[in-house]
Length: 126
Image (cartoon, rainbow, N blue to C red; front, side):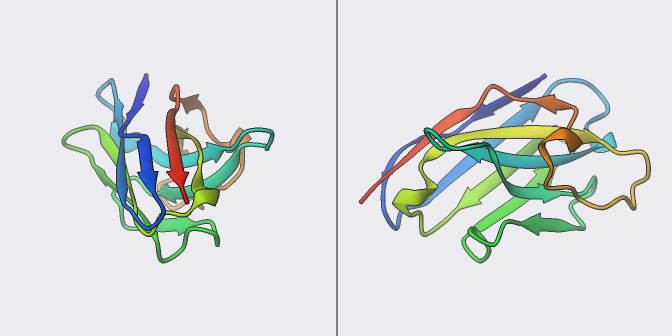
């Protein structure tokens, strides 16, 4: 089970940190990802991180502004979002990918993830 939190209403240029807490004892067996869905749009990839945080991947739209990280001791993945823009407004979802090989690529495909959290709303005003 994945529980996302940390969303809110902020102004353009502000920062937010999202958290996603996972239940269970095998958190390190999963790659983790963040996706977002704006009103009227499809859910899109934001960022992903490997099992130990050694590899990350970002959507071009957030590179240099967002940072994904994880703490396996706390079963939590984070998304630090800086320099927020109105176009970042969306519901943000965390997701878990049960990898078969720890060297597998980090995927940006929705169907590459096995479990999803409930989402947290991020609203950026101009």
